[in-house]
Image (tube, rainbow, N blue to C red; front, side):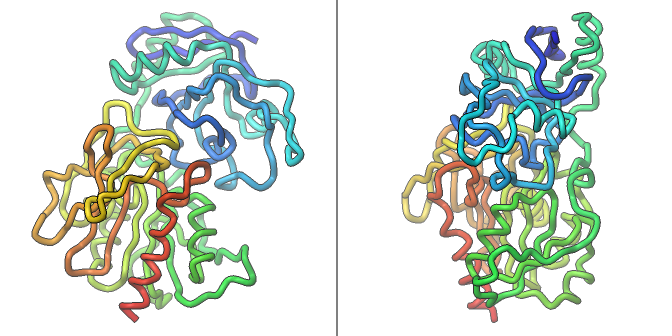
Length: 363
């Protein structure tokens, strides 16, 4: 079946459909990971986005039951150069195409993803539509232009859970500290890392109030990753602000951005975002460089941080944007990248232990 990817600036890409059929809208971005497509398509942070993989062959190891990072796929579309219909891996239980069809996600193959990536790098991420039912190029460009985009849109409410639950995957792990995780689209490997570091993990909806959190008597608060514009999730920012002087806090990705806003800083949209597993980040204290996993389109404006209270701890070596911060007086820190990886390098996994150290010191 034919499929078309149309960008709001009039750029058109033709290809063949795999996965679900129909029509979907989203901001088109590129991911530079060579492997890990299952983790990418199950990362809730991609809600509202159409993801193009820069690696040319995708689908060759299928889909398994272990590597999903959430309860389902949330992205709006998946773009590849070549889709492998043959899946060869001992853990594989189904093909990528079948998985996308089950999750009602449109896939398109046969696209020159190099050209698409260069286009986005030069002009920036932009709104797009992916369709198998409307093959009129002008019609699709008009639809892309008229779509809502990401700025000012609350996508967290579409990926967060409805009721709290206890994460219990490793029965042998010691549970030394109780941590409440505000689910704005949390990845499962974050919960695994917290549990492995000695935490009893309670996952709560993004709408949970500060009072409800304090009634659980936690030792720490974790602000999760998630999709879209942090400025649109003011209710989580307000909850965070009320808890700043009450608990040790650790934030990742969207959690980092919301924490920045709780500190009084502003956020802004990056030209084409950071998506992939090979982004260099420098620790300003040690001088060490970690290769990190990233997935975000917004960033905290470091110029708007109150430097009297907040210390910048990490910067991105590709564009010098803010990648980490720490409060100078309170037991609070955050990073823009993903120390839990899945997929990607484990250079920054020590940060979960740092969070436990903060709770131990605060006990």
